[in-house]
Length: 292
Image 1 (cartoon, rainbow, N blue to C red):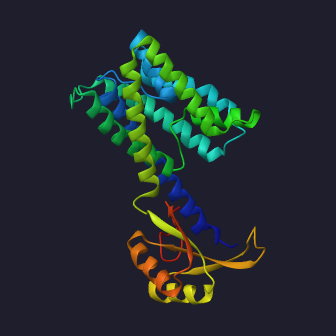
Image 2: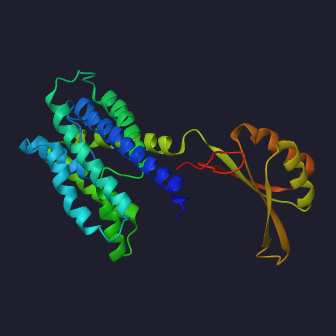
Image 3: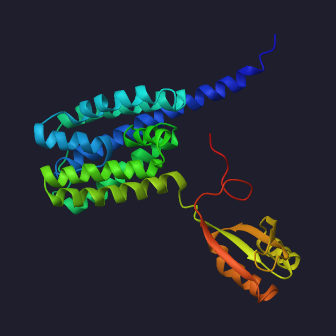
C-alpha cells in the first residue's frame, strides 16, 4: 500500500492549524480594539458589529453576544454559497470574537486615551491588523460581506454596493439615535481599519506595472530585460483608429526602479507611449512567493 498521501495530508493539517491560530489571534485583536478604544470613547462601527454597538449604547446589550446571534442566520443562509472551509473558519472567528468581547469587557482594561480621534486611529490600527490576519487565514469575522454575497446573487447590486448601503443605514441610525459626531468618528475609524487591512493583506509590495507602445518594441524590451533583470512580455494589439498591428510591452518592476526604467525607455525610444500603474500585489519569480 502506498502512503504517498501522507505528506500532503500533513501539509493540509498544518495549514488548517495555522489558519485557526491566525483567526484566533485576529479575532482577539479585533475584540480588544472595540473594548479598549471604541466603546470607552462612545464611537460606532459599521457592519454587524456597528449594529451591536448601537444596541449596546441604547439598551446595554452585550456586543459579543449580539454579534454572534446576528451572524447565525447569515451563515445559515450562506451555507451553500461560500466554501465549507471559509464558512467554518468564519463561524470559529465570530465565536472567538464574541467570547473575547465578553471576557475582555469584564477585566479592567487600561484607559489608553479619552480623545476620540486618537481612539479612531489606533483602534482602526489594531482592528485592521486583526481583521487582516483573519482574512489572510482564510476566515472572517462575519458581517455584511455575507449579506452582500446573498443580495448580489438575487439582484444586480454588487457586493461592495450592498456593504456600502448597509453601512450607510447604520451610520444614519447612529446619527438619529446617538448623534452625528458618533457617526463621523465611526467613518474615520472604518477608514483607518480598511487601510490597515489592505496593508496587512498586500504588505509594502507596491510594485509598478508598465505597458509600453513603441515603434521598436524589440529594442525597448531587450534594454529593459538586460538592465532591469526583469521579465518582459509582448502582447499583440491593434490600433482602433489606424488598424495597425502593434506589440505592447508589459513589465512589472519595483517602485525603486521607476526612475531608471523611464530613463531607459526614453533613451531607447523617445516617442514611446508609456503607462505606469500600481500593482499592489505581485506573486511569482523575482517578487513574492506563493503563501499557503
